[in-house]
Structure formats: C-alpha cells, structure tokens
Image (cartoon, rainbow, N blue to C red; front, top):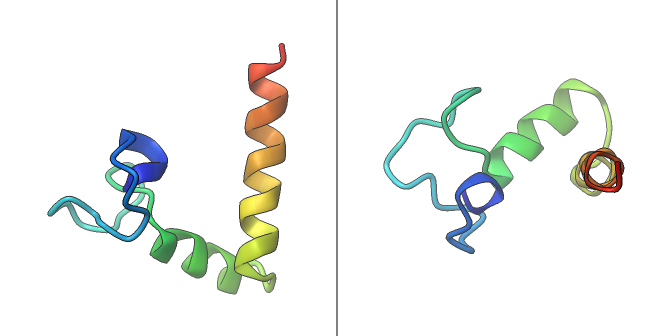
Length: 57
C-alpha cells in the first residue's frame, strides 16, 4: 500500500482488500499489467510518467 499511504511497504495492503479505491500495491500493478498485456515495469513507468507530469504543472 505504500504507493498511496507512504508506509514504504509496497506489498502490504494494511489489512484492506486489494480493490480499486482501497489499496495500491505491487499486486495491483501485476494485475493491471496482465490486463493490458504489458510488464509490471512498463505499468509502473507509465504511472510514474503521468504522476510526474501532474506534479510538474
């Protein structure tokens, strides 16, 4: 969940289910990458690029 709460543990969902809107974990990226036929690294890089552009505004 560290992707959205800041705990620093990317695989820990903090007891919340891995569902859209509750926890963003490595498992989330794995599922999204599979659904979009890409690698986890590609999914994370694409997410990073978009977030960077949002912060650079």
